[in-house]
Length: 529
Image (cartoon, rainbow, N blue to C red; front, side):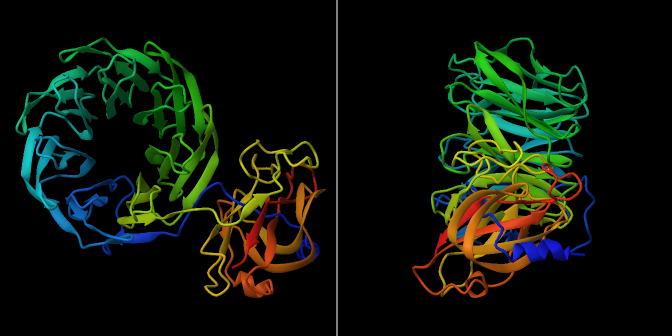
């Protein structure tokens, strides 16, 4: 039940608005299956690459319902063609990767599959047509991950795999012409091989190997000594419970490759600074906000030149991202969607050809492949809870500088607004979204004709009279919500050229930071057109 005292205060125009650094559109389904729900632990995988050579990224995915690998052509402008079968000769496919394995100029496909222990590849015959499955190995017991990189310095991509039941991290030399050598095992001391990738960690010009062993709670690497020889194991960390993925990126902008891991046993996304010479610093946690995470991806989502992190988590159906604030510091979880039921995998790729990275997801229970458009922020954010405008939050509850949030709430961070649609009055499609407020609480969206920045309740009042109370928004279990009505109509926006300021006031009961029982987002200015 909504507290009527709270609504009455909102009519006075006490609100703050918001603007996220980056926003994503609503879920757009590429494919799904209308069969019976799939158990949680049988997931979908998704990958994106230009398979037909027309310059845009097509979508490759696994299907649980019939244990197949399929692809869909990108038709342009975010539209996709029907499912096209690549193979049905896999039992529970677990991983996908693309590389030009036969040096003919197009991207071939690699896969691993769990119940048949296969590492296999499929030749791209041109135009998105694929040849029959060619098995590289059937000695990867519960094959979990596949990767390709030139390990022996001969100019062609070799194939790496991780397998769970035998704990193997192994590689196969590419002999050329699509022929591969026998399995060469790098690691098999413990069961639970989950992830592997290769890149130059020590700056000597060749590709080293990084891997995750789940059951021994290990993230480690081996130096490439040249000619296909590798060093003994170099431990990076044991401070992970069932690590699921490893990757590399320059998180702190110092020119070398740091290591990333996520572990679903402790629900931890973390990174390890490359200190030079192959030495890595202690674990630095990015987030523990995803419930049972299973997918991750690293990419520059906001176009600021540093790598951000994406996650897919199964128990909360979330696709989310974490902004790199610079120098290896990360902001809080920002939810893209909670409509991916048992979210399993996530990728960033430019699907609509507009030059920025969109988000692609796979979810298991609804067997859905979907994407979310990366949309530039609409409006101008202001009145942050970090004190940079000269006004601090009421009780020392300033938020971190640079996040664009309101004052810190009892969840430990500030709330902010995002906008989808446009500022066009004629289109009337503007939707204001709130993130990082208090879960399950009522809130009120308010519009003001003038700017403000003054302490109020647990936050800062960012709008001034005349004000309009627009609508009540009941926040979901993630502290998020969206406007439902016409912003321009509810706010009596007079026409193109009008400027209005927006903010959301939300309840923060019982454990409110300053004791007032409510807080506000930061502010957002919209110049209507």
